[in-house]
Length: 187
Image (cartoon, rainbow, N blue to C red; front, side, top):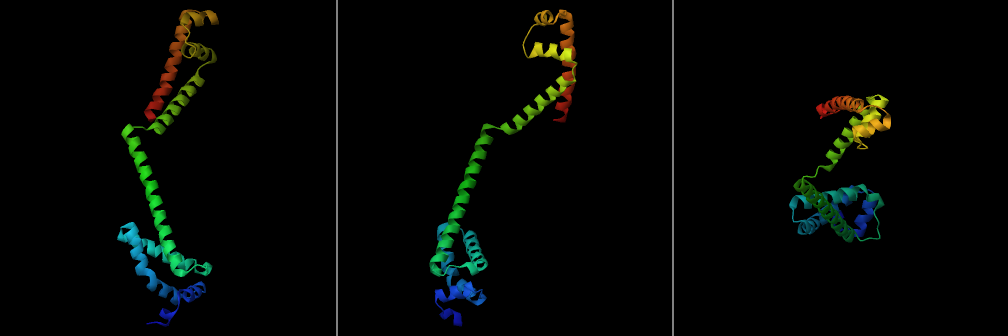
């Protein structure tokens, strides 16, 4: 029996606050068993219970100089174990929520992010292709495809023949196909 085993919890806590390693060892031996059983009852996992106790004592030693002597040592240790276990439960609940959400996404086949990125890249490739077109050809193409005007309507509005409109649209599509095909080859 060591001399420290006769010290009260308050005396051990005071010595711990001063950085006394032997006092820390006595606290460890005095409470490790009951704290482990307490953790095991709540966690129902031996390894996790041991981890909680080891983390508790590591933290106790690292923060020993800041230990509040107004709190009884036993109460502090039990509360610290309980708080660590609550943190574990909260983390498990969050993790379970993530797993559940991931399962829902997989079940529904939602890969929205990837699709959105590809869509934006395709739009950028089309816009880059449009930038390659001569101004008049671009105007004809945009009127045909974006304003949904017929070749006759475009010809009347721009004072050009229907055949010229048809050729301009055809040539614009050729340029855009090359640009889009190079984009698709990258994918």
